[in-house]
Length: 83
Image (tube, rainbow, N blue to C red):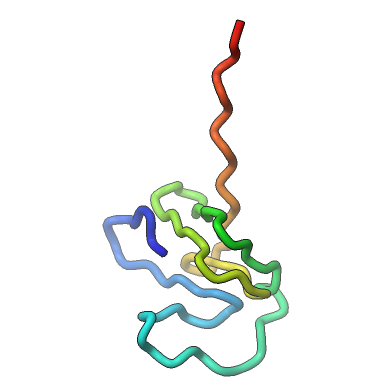
């Protein structure tokens, strides 16, 4: 699920295959070896620029990338200290 998107077009992939609409048939083929880090259900993933944020709604073995650059898991916001 797209949470935030950059202004321009980007190519989002999972496991090395292009992502498409939900009603499209899934891509067939082998998982790319350099895109097999996996995705975790409920985690948010960011690109290096921080302008693309995706929420994983279906976990799997393929890792997410944007324009060939891997996305990283967004960390939790630190809670304020209670002094």
